[in-house]
Amino acid sequence: MTTANKVTIGRILLIPFFVGATLYYVKTGNEIHRLTALLCFAVAAICDGVDGYIARRYNQRSELGTILDPLADKLLLVSGVVLLSFDHGERLGQIPLWLTITIIGRDLLILAGLVVIHLTVGKVKVHPRIVGKMATVLQMVAVLWILLKWDAAWGERWLRVWTLGAAGCTAVSGLWYVWDGVKQLSSSPKSSPGDQSRKA
Image (cartoon, rainbow, N blue to C red; front, side, top):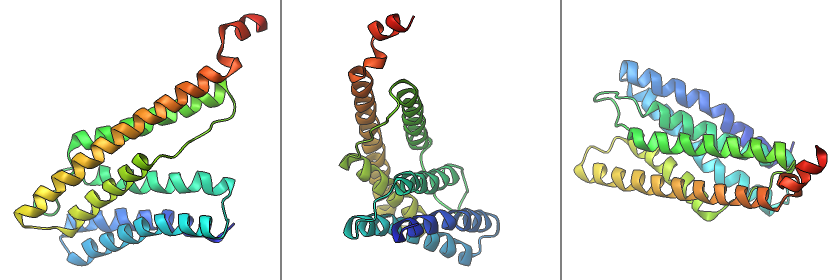
């Protein structure tokens, strides 16, 4: 249990508080709940970079960390994106449904690919790319932007910029993961027809 993993676990523990505070704000309109939700999400988002820095700086990379870090990202972002996809009237802005479908669709596609590769090849090699990190950052910015409740017209314009950027990076990173998965399957002897015929 390294320091980096403890920070990651702290991020995961903040998610229920973020979700609860957001729901209470939507129900009551009490600004304290919105600020609490904003603070929880912002701290969890910042700690995404902190635990990565600690792991690299102090050589604390671990198998547990490779599982917990992306899990914390997905739980935080999916909860935020899904919550803000609903119409909350004047309480909060709304994330476009097409962006939510893009994000969840990509994650489900990646999960299905990981299962297929694990069952076929055994060892799954994941190659993080900068476009994937950009997608994560832009998704976080979009959620934070809505929680900040910028009322001016420029706030709406910038929200469109964040959502379009997040959708583009999410789609491209998904295609990269599919390409990497296809290469892993193609390079494995277990996936060749000859290997299967010999087993038969």
